[in-house]
Length: 312
Image 1 (tube, rainbow, N blue to C red):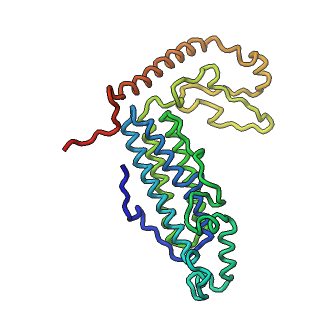
Image 2: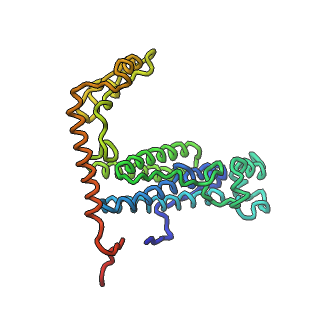
Image 3: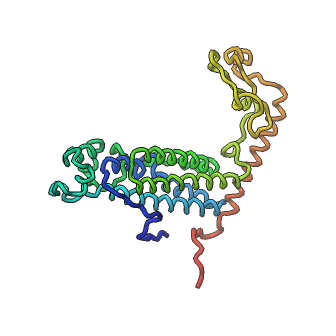
């Protein structure tokens, strides 16, 4: 059950019209990394998370709802940036606010043309109001959403989503000199960082959470780093020394072609891996049963009811 407050979460303000930036800001309204995409991603992920992780369901719904409020902030800012463009712009006199802002550097018509030519959806379909399209007029698409049904996978997707959104806001601030708009963008950018840390903390509470999913990695093929760029090779913690958090050493394959030939297409492996293979298979069975039981035990018996209403 949603309840809408007429007041924005953050006091979004605009000091002067800027239709060009209004169009750019559509990227965070109906774009791939925008607020609607984030809201719908966390909203859809929450359903699968309720059993057996009601605490994560609560978190995802809270953050999804906040993202909807951020969508409202972005939409309101876009609308305020179009002040003087919407309405009876063609009937406005030269002393209109939009002309004062431009200080006579361009005609009113050229201002409108520059603002709208990059996205003709503005004047043709919406008349200048925010719409669920990105800055190029491409409609919002559900394929932007990543919801895989495994909470550890979904939380990692969310870390990436928050990172991308944070970067978009960072870039957007380069294209406006309005201190109020920058303040709003800074707030939205900072909340992406806060959400990132929330998802990171939530992921740590699910153990084990690596590798993603249930099935373990095949120990015969986990440690190899294949040097497919032999002319200018580089080494680092991704191919040399101990694998992060694995308690095993990387195996650097300097000549992948000969290695594949010598191992008959990687079908010949060290016999010492047999014990690890057996242990892996046992862990696959154990973790599969554990994950299944977690959901089954959390499911209600009899009539299913999503909400527990407080009795009066």
